Each structure stands twice: as C-alpha cells, then as structure tokens.
Length: 376
View (tube, helix red, strand yellow):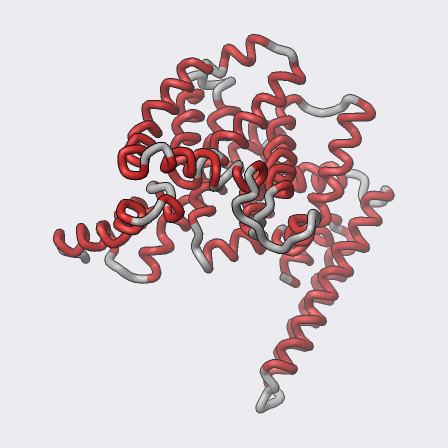
C-alpha cells in the first residue's frame, strides 16, 4: 500500500505536466484522478493501473443490459451484452487500458439514465452527471454524442413533452456546476487558450481547424469496424443497413431505437470527417452496435432460411474458418514447433471447431454467434 507522502508525490507527478506544461499537453483530469485513487488503494502496479478501466467496462456491460431490456426486452439485452463483452475492441482496451474505456463507461451510463427516466424521472439528473464525468474524461465529445442522439429522437417525434422531460435548463446548470472549475483552472493557467484548446481545438478542431493530420482515407473506420467488432461485425452491418432502410423506406422503427442508431451514426460520421483518426475512436460506439447486432440476430433467428439468414451463414462461417486457418499458418511460420505437440493441439482445436459447427447446424444463433466466438 502507498504511504501518504508517496501517494501525493505520484499524484503530483501525474498532474504536473498538465499544470506546468504547454496547452498542447492538456488532458482532462478525471482518468488521472481515478488511476491515482487506484494506486492509493491497491499500490503502484500494472493491475492497479487497469482497475479503473475494468470497473468502467463492467459498469458499461451492466448499463448495456439495462438499455437492451428497456428498448428490446431481456432476450436481446442478454445477447447484446454477451456480444459486447466478446468483441475484440473491448478485450483490446482492457489489455492495453486507455482513457477511452472510461469514456465508454460514462457514455453507456448516460444513455441508460436517459432510457430509465421514463420509469424514474429523477434519473435525468444522472444523465447530465454522467455526461459531465465523460467531459472531464475525454472532453466535449461526451456531451455532443448523447445530445445529438437524444435530440434526433426529439426532433423526429416532434414531441415537446419529450424535450421538457429532459429538463434542459436543469441539465445546463448541472453541466456548468461540475465542469466549470476545471475550465476555470485552465483559463487561470493558460489564459483563453486553455479552455479553447480543451473545448474546441483538440476535438472539433480536428474537423474544422485541421490542427492535426495523419494519413488516413475516408473509409478508415469501416476497415476498423470489420476487425474491432468481430466476431459480430457482419451481423451488426446487416442489422444497421436493414434498420436504416426500414426506417427510411417503410417508416418502421421503434422510437426508442433512434438514440442507439444516432449514437453510432453521428459518432461514425464525426470521426470519419476528422483529419486525425485513431482506431479506438470507433470503440466509443461498441455498446450501441452490440445491441443493434443483438436485435438483428434475435429477429433473424425466427426466420433463419431467409435471404439475410443465408447471407449471414456464409459470412460468419467463412470468416470463422478463415480466422482459424490464418491463425494456424501464422503461428507455425512465426513459432516453428520443436515437437509435434503444437500442431496436434491446433488440429484438436480445429476438430472442436468442426464439431461445434456440426452441432450448430440446427441452431442459427450457434452458427452466427457461438461459432465465431470460438474462432476468435
């Protein structure tokens, strides 16, 4: 355990670059405090550094289940939560913990509070509080994504009562009360440049000011989606496309679904317009994507022999077989075995894959979910 002086020394070391450094080094303080508290409670080690991300990941799974229950029902909620926990994006963020895992946790909790307000109106205050914590973790993106997603539903429904239920003036007061001390501190340290950089330049500036640049194409995040949301990237893409077409062409979409679709679509468009793209930006949308994929799979499981079902069969089984084959080849080339044990174990794994495939022939969700999970 840390002694008192050691704890404060580490806290100073963590925050000093942001206090004495230039405005280019500004980073929101929430994640730093969470890591410092973890060090205080559990000592300075790799596990302690990961604890805040692990806690927020677990909270995001619970919140995803609650959102799925309120929007679609328990069956889809369970499947969506399992999908979220299994995707490569989540495991990657926990093995190499980033501040974005904490942001995802607060975003998911904010959306849960939004949906929960219909049953418990007081949770609308939690919505703004979680948005505040997200802003103190990653900046204004934590405010823009929920407000755009919720605003889309309010606009499409043309329901003033829905807007009143959000208590926007109270929400504004909560946001200002929680975040103002941080931005005032930036102003006192760096002048106007501090809050301007934190609120605009390092986030929206990547779209409008072009301060940062890296060599990426407009379809960068589509490439990222195809691997980071595995083993359910294809069900999600099919579910998203069919859901949007159904809403545009046939006007068939649950109003409660609109914020989930907005969560993904608005974020995807925003980060795709950015001149500086990093893969983990897309991970912010993983909970919404998992629930959209879960709903699509649950609907499709009732008519597995449809054209969509046959297409998904081909995509999921082909991708699973390709992943296993490529993994085997790469492992054998990179680490040539000194004995026959490694190839034998890999053949046994492939045999288990084949047996699972044969057993899942009569169970659509087995082919579409369990089989890809085994491969990944």
